[in-house]
Amino acid sequence: MEYTFEITDKVRDYECDLQGIVNNANYQHYFEHARHEFLKSRQVSFARLHDEGCDAVVARVDIAYKVSLRPGDEYVSKLCVQKEGVRYVFHQAIYRKSDNTLCVKGRVDSVVVLHGKLVSGHPQLDALLS
Image (cartoon, rainbow, N blue to C red):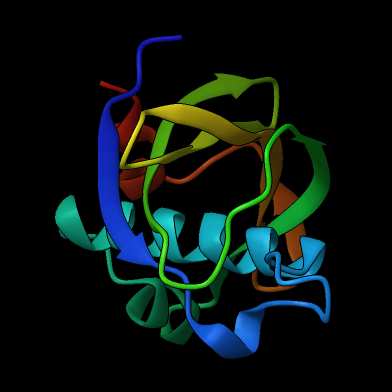
């Protein structure tokens, strides 16, 4: 997979279970943060789109957990996006920075709702594909 965007972050203590590993639900937060930062890096404002009646919403999430992150671990969250029909498909992965170990990989399918109706895309979001 050739990723087109990456961001580095760090695991915070409160994101972990009693076992001392990142709670599985937090990986979705990490993925979402990466998608929002990706949009910002391409000068796409999620808030502005919403104000214009355009909402990109998650339709499906598929995550494969490989190796757990722990408190203090730095990680690199990577993504690329492609279009499949009406869906924008984000292929995402998280690697532990210290040894480049794949910790989580996933696919997040998003669709666009414009003024309450499903549409096949949006020019600002389509521009992310090039």
